[in-house]
Length: 270
Image 1 (spheres, rainbow, N blue to C red):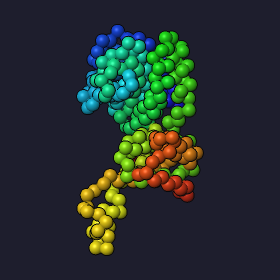
Image 2: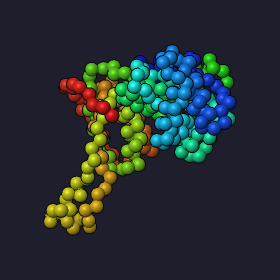
Image 3: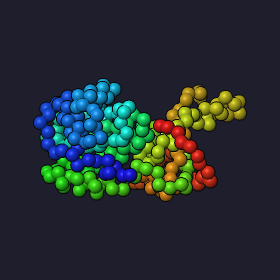
Image 4: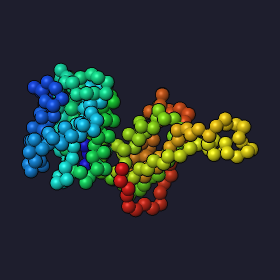
């Protein structure tokens, strides 16, 4: 299943009467109720769940984008919708600017991995200024649906191949860490581990032979990320990770290795 298949025609809207964050959440709750999947939930229950999620931290991000979301125990799948507010609404965004594009997700609490992949799929594409500008400029619902189909048609949310690859990323440059993790979570169904560790210098400092090379044993940033992914996706994932750096190439502080896996079984959660 790709992301576009989760979008419901009745959960897409251009324009809003809301003037503030609470008004937007009410409107999203009302819009979400148009999906038969939520027939057993009231508009007020959806609004309360969205509001409770915002108390943990605003889902309003930079560049006019917000991804309000919540989950319920007794929900079997996901409702995904879009609300465009061309004039913008104050939504406590991280850059302090008004928010104009609201992708909302209401899903199953037990399908956390899929929820994270949906979030990552949206946030990945929303880094494009061209995509943001186009979404804001569209005036007709049919045109918006067509454009959403074009940008999300290749976003696969399910595992497709039995052949797997193990990616190992050794990260010393903290600036890259969160972007790399975001690329991986949009491509991997939960099989990711992050190990906190230190570089070799931290340990060599305790050996008399090497003590003169380091003045102290202060820990530096060092993480190892393991990700099991479909082999068919490996080249694209590595390319996207490299694109995080300047001119399509990561600078010092990141080492990537990849190897084919002969056997895999089971899974781990995010």
